[in-house]
Image (cartoon, rainbow over all chains, first blue to last red; front, side, top):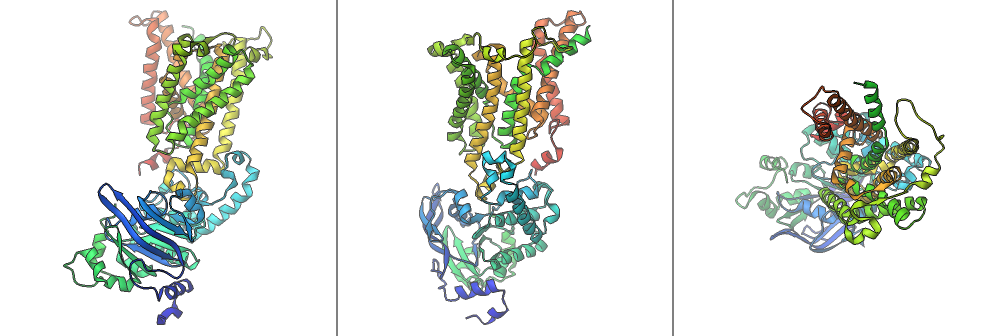
Length: 303
Length: 328
């Protein structure tokens, strides 16, 4: 058992403890996986973008999916969330097979994602963006829509919940502004808050820190940690090692479509295979949490 | 020149029967394009479906007008499903291609010799179409309005038409301020984001297409009843583009956009025509003849639209702030 779990937040302590005895090899089994994928592959023409033999995501932990540009991280995200169809593969969410399930159904089941290029609904207000996230709204049925008494009470409860979330993300002063008028970082916050509005069991964040200034990055990291503390599982794609080191409980490294390493952040950064994937084989030194070359690499984006 | 008469004729057309037909199509298009972002370039097909349903049921099969209105709504719903089911899962452009093609296909189908017995071929269906409706006319036989030059029959159509148009406007208002409206506006902004929040986007798009098509079908019903004639070549693609013009003029995704757009469009179009005719008839313009007026008024209309797009691209009712957000 790691010595310092007493000083950690309870959610983090639980995650660290649960993952303590997990083998640090690609595809290692986790004690309580929320998501298990087998033989998921997707090729674009001749290029095999994703070819994952086996991967498990631990419930209640923050798992980072890292890898150099073009490693297939976002493609794997798209496949698991149903936004893209794999050539082959099976995966389960909460032990239930969900391969081929429509993306909106997966979202309703509790698997909610965000996008690398933020999708704030520009010409809608911040509040409307949030309310769109609420699930099971009777007023979204076309026949109820014209009968406000069938949905007014629910709407009011949703507005209250949205206000709480917006206050947490420091957006409560902006509720009547168009989402398109927010800054890039605020849009990231809004997208994250909106995803939480769905009430997910797992949030899958595609590069939540991309294009966000350093000050806001810190606050974003704090929010992601809070999501875990509330018992929601987080899986996020990132290629900036600094961020990953700070917040993740477990790191999965992808390169050329495959998972090449897994483990706690400290261990993964020392893995020669990971260093090679990131920097090429001639670099022998371990990746540091403030490695300048990595930060420079991450500026390039992962288009 | 008799300005009083020019004004009277212009106003009569700006809020008259033809304007109403376009208004219904525009209210429907506002649901589809304005709020949901569906590029429906075949709105005229829904109007034609409404008009032909009335024509065929009443004239070909000699059945009740009221039945034909029900059939018109069923036809427009089926048309929406036929167009929407294969295309709404695809990118937006496909709906545009399919709808414009389908509207022309439909026109060529109803004017074809093969179905002459049912649809009347190129001559269409002409006869006592709206008898049951006109029998209900409560206006006294010698009733006339000051300024506005409608016949008693047209006035009855206009009264019912505007009542229905206001009712549909109210319906749209109710829909778009509800959570349902929030979802369709979200779809217009970014479909994937709405999917990621657990909404079945396909169903919402289909609903919007059906609702918008149904409202447009009322334009066709009104057309058949008021003009007592349904002719295939009046349902050309340019009808749809005028409807788009009307919608952009009034401001898309504004509840009153279609009404304002329709009245201004027809006021300007009729106004240009009446003023030009009058100038020509009184000898002020001698390089044009009265027969040129029809096309020149559309040129002037086009010029007016260009000016609108340059100086007020959001339409009369639109919000410039919203438009600026698109550029980001």
